[in-house]
Length: 88
Image (cartoon, rainbow, N blue to C red; front, side, top):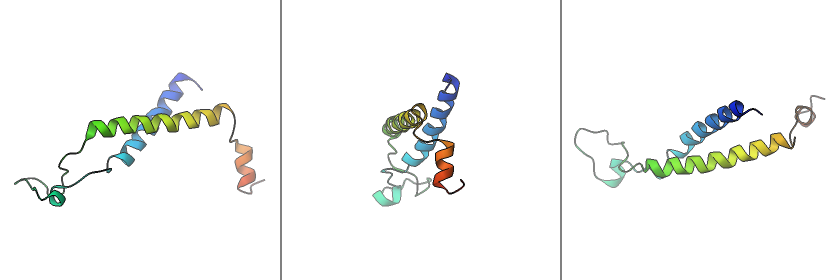
């Protein structure tokens, strides 16, 4: 796998994981009882974005490493998937 391909795959995994991690621990203004006048009541009070970026990077790196190992050691092949799904 080329470096460009690896970076592109990591980028896609990172953004996908970010959207999965964003809702973790979010509390809205309504839930905390501190609605600021003129803002959306569903807006988060403290989103902890830096912590979420760290978690996103850690989880993405783990997923990317597993995908790279699977690709490098040919643990999953197209023929194996075809057999598993009953196409051969």
